[in-house]
Length: 429
Image 1 (cartoon, helix red, strand yellow):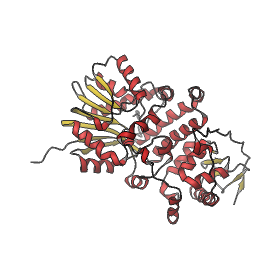
Image 2: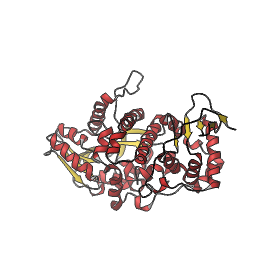
Image 3: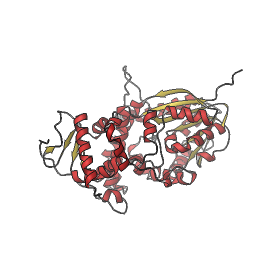
Image 4: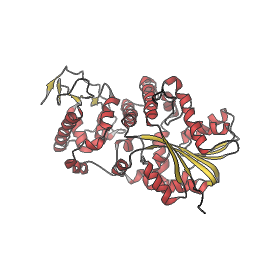
């Protein structure tokens, strides 16, 4: 059944360079799978109360007032893409300008709520029609890891500076909260909230004057600077040449070149002995096959009595297991080689491969949703400046979807972020 609505204005198509965006420029033709995708979307629209608007002034299914809107500008292309490659096709269709939403985060939050229920239990076998495994060339082996990091973090320091705050912190902030515990987030207090996050992590690791600190994942150097300001000596590891150069300049400008050394180095090659190891949202880039090596390295370099403080994005263990080994749109276009862990996976990896144990966890997922909202707003407001850096419309739509998709994951509770303390238990006598 279809229902009339006001006709939609045609979407401005995102012209995709077939050399740079081959799978966005090319629309697959798969009539049977497209029919299945259309029927599945109708079911989702009915079950979730979505308003799926078609360009001929109709609705795919009747929808309640105020329902999240999925506006299809080129339905045939959308259904063929989704039928061929599922959520990868869903994302590529957005990059191509084939669908939109007046509230992208609201729509994606609804879809991220209990995502395992979107496909009927009896139709789960359909995943085999489109689900692929990550390419071997993107697994984060020592040979591949630098390429994976380069594809995201070496895009442009100027690009990141346009939407991050002045600390250039590319991870969840910790905001002050209202009496109900909701984060009080604004663009004016984002830098302060990033410092609050860093300081809590350094406190968790026990970093103070004279501490020997290893940081795995430099970012643009803000954590290393704040650790050095406490009197610590820091070795910071990165595989991003762009981040390395700018972090060194920022550390020098802060006057801490005598206390901070930034190395272009894989975590597996870390050397030395440290009182504290800190790592902010790095474990997600390691990839599940390499978590044992990641935690074993930390265990190897941690001095007796030392402490490890991680900030990690996490997901429920069952969802992690279900998605492990699946090639997703995020892996294809944003973070190749990655895998978001569960807290249980971190407990298992440390228990099986190290003497470390999880001693404490502090979760603050709503703060990440707000952090991402502020980044997304700044990103979209500065579209002209981003274009001037040489990033085309397909790239901008890709990043808008990435930021909105991530924000929705935290808003729905599908994703969480935690600061996790690892220590070596005292031997029993």
